[in-house]
Image 1: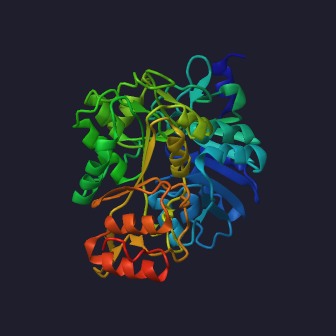
Image 2: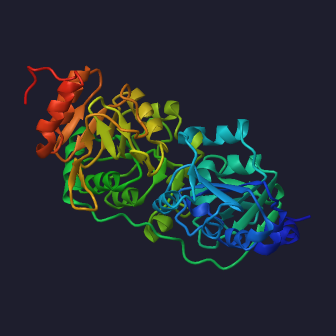
Image 3: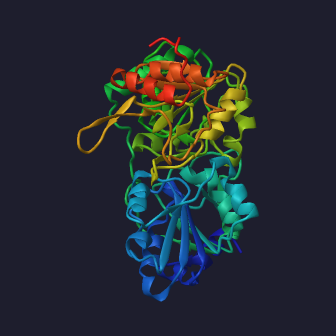
Length: 444
């Protein structure tokens, strides 16, 4: 049987394909642009026939029909490994639960501990050899599909075909059902316009980035601003090794800064695990031999990251306390995002020869009543710790960059107060003193 004959034999409508799902099943949607829009809608239409269908996904920008159609969660229970803003809203509404993880471990979790009855995801059209490309979702997709009892692929004609190192494709022989249908253009997540504080944060980081450095730019506005500012700088021959490929790398490439020629490993190739952004990004990724997409199990391994000399990791967070603990995933008990790959890259960059890790945040936020609050706090109140104080390296606000490595508790307090908003420094000093982490000879 030819690959085309196998394809036709496995072709189903979305409604036919989801008939395989039974009450009590675990169903996986993989991640981001791999979200199976048609299959999710068809499964939602079966709501009254099913109970206790548990669904996993992450970084899905919605709408997820199965979550929205069942406010009691009697029929569908949606869970996310890492919340997009849309999934955060679902959490606020009690329609999503979080699954703690670090991204390098997600596929091993499936391999060793988890059940997947049905996995379904969007893929590119099949090529002449019978392969579907896993596109922007390669980072976790193949490992999930391999664990599934039943694999359903939804062909999305708009996905870029991204060349890979390994596990970036699945063959028609390994697929149970194929679904076709018209899709809207890929959702675009363009970079937000930078605030003045974001630009100042970026300017504090730029002096630490030298020619030939390899960059990881995490999720969030500030890492993207760093990329844009680097594109306008005199730094040359930068490399890409990142969990997420965003528009910032296109900026660097078009400015002639991203060459990958000085990388210690995978020279000439920018490496990523997942991707989302603008149409411009998807067009740049499509069949680009200068980009290699690989499983996050490899990309986010601290050993792999540390294999790059001068590895620079830049990530955002929500808050830092005076001990140097970092939260990037909750505000008190309100869930925001997830650990993701931040701890993976912080660890790997610190192990790299000449490497550095930067955790960035605005010094303040304004609440809904217009009141200003400090994002540098004396200590956490139920906030989930993403990065332990024992691993925090550079912390950067619009007021400066400080290095906490090897610093005592009183030194950390002094350094962090120095980059807090001036309106809160006296209060932070007084509270640090109560916590017995302030030396009275410290500068005030």
